[in-house]
Image 1 (cartoon, rainbow, N blue to C red):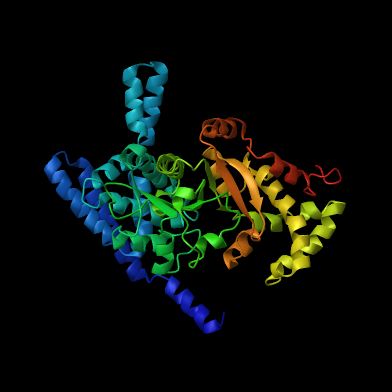
Image 2: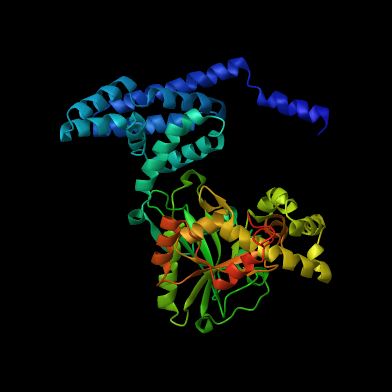
Length: 445
C-alpha cells in the first residue's frame, strides 16, 4: 500500500471531535425516547412513541452507534443492588413470590424495550438489522454482549417454527425475492438470471423459510438437485448447459447449497427444520426418492492443514507429507495427473481425520460438519476434486463431503452427537481416517 492511500484511510477513520459530539448527542436523544417508551402505559400512545423511537434510531449516522450501544449496555441492564436484594430474599425465603420477583429483576429492561420497539411497523426488521450492526463490532466491544444476548433471546421466540412459513421458490416467484437469492447465495455464487433459472428447472428444487414480519426477506434457503445416485462433484450440478433430467426418474435428493440470509439472526437455527421438512415434502412428491444427502464443502480444511504442520513434522511419516503439501500453492496442480494422484493419496486420509477427529471444545472443528451432524446426518463419503472452483481449491483443496440423512436414523444420530460428542460416520470414512499419518502407529499420540 502506498503512503498517500494509507494516510487517506487513517484520516477517514478519525472522527472529528465536533462530529463525534454531534453523534453522541443524537444517540442520547434516541435513548431519551427509549426511556419514554418504557415508561409509557397507553397502547395507542406507546405504539406512536415506538414509531418515533424507531424512526429516530434509523436516522442515526454510523458514528453514533457506539455511543448508542454503550448507553443501551449501561442504562438498560438489571440494577445490581435490587438484584442482590432479590437473591437474598429468595435464599432467605424460597417461595413463588420471591422467585417471580427475582425473575422480573433478572430480565434486563432492554428486552422490554425491544418488545415495545417491535410494535412499530418495520420493528422486527430494524431489530434484526441492529443485531447485525452490533455483531460486526462485538469482538472489539465485549461490554455489548448483554445487548446481543437479549436480542438473540427474543429472536429465538419470535422466529420459532410456529411463525415460519416454508415456500417453494420457482421461476414464478416475485422478482424481488429471486433477486435476493442471487444476492444472498453464500455457497456457490449465482452468476446471473440464467444461472438462477437453471437452478429452478424441473430437476431442481429450491425452498425457503419466511416470517410474517419479513415477507420479502428469505431467512434461509436450500437448493436441491434431483439425481440418480449420490453426486460426487458440484460442477456438473452447476453447469448451465447440463441437460434437464426427468425428476420422476430420480432416486436421490442432493442438498448442494444451504444459505442463511440474515446476519442479524446468526445463531438462530432454521436449517435443521428446513432440511427435514424438504426431505419429507420431496418424499411425498417423488416416491422413488429414498436417499437424501448433501454435497457439502469442507471450508476449514486448508486452514486446519496449515495449523497441523507441527504435528506432521513431529512424526517420520509426516515429513514427506509436508514436502508434498507445498504443491497445494501451485496453480492448477490438480491438472497434473501424477501430482493429483499423489495428493489424493495424502489428502483424503488427512481430511477424513479432520472431519472425524479434529476437535474444538469437544465438537468438530469444521462448522459445516457441526451443522449436519447436529441435525442427525451421517458422515457418509469424501469426494476427491469435487469442487475445482477457485474458492473450493483455496478452502478445501477441492474436497467435498456427502452427509447422509436417513430419516429413520436422524433422531438417534442427533442424540449420539449431542450426548456423546461422537461423529456418526460410515465404515469407509473411518477406515480412511485410520490411514492418516496422525493415527498411524508411528504418529499416534
